[in-house]
Image (tube, rainbow, N blue to C red; front, side, top):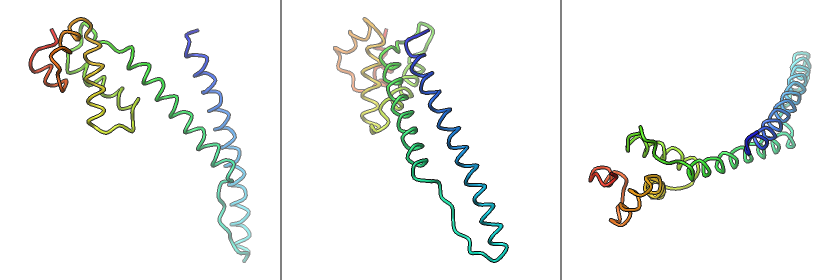
Length: 149
């Protein structure tokens, strides 16, 4: 069993339980709505039915937990992501950009580009260390000037 499997299995289990509870509550709400509609058809006054605050809070907390877990996993993936031998520099840059946007979703484009450049150079190993001495400002400039080799 890999290190992350136990944690994601626990999270998955809590997600299933929350969904099951939400579906049960949804069934109760539908039943209540049908009763209200039935009464309305008999001349009774109809009132709107809204999910109870406890269910809304539980769903909100669950979303926050899932989002924070995705951020942690993306940051871990970013640390480990190096350029593959058969991968082009532009493909590597795009893969890093996707991971950085997931890991740092509140960053603006300039900050994302800075993180991509930093990890791009780290992922090149010795070549990246040599290029870093030239103080590149963007990945595109580094690729265009053929400084990666």
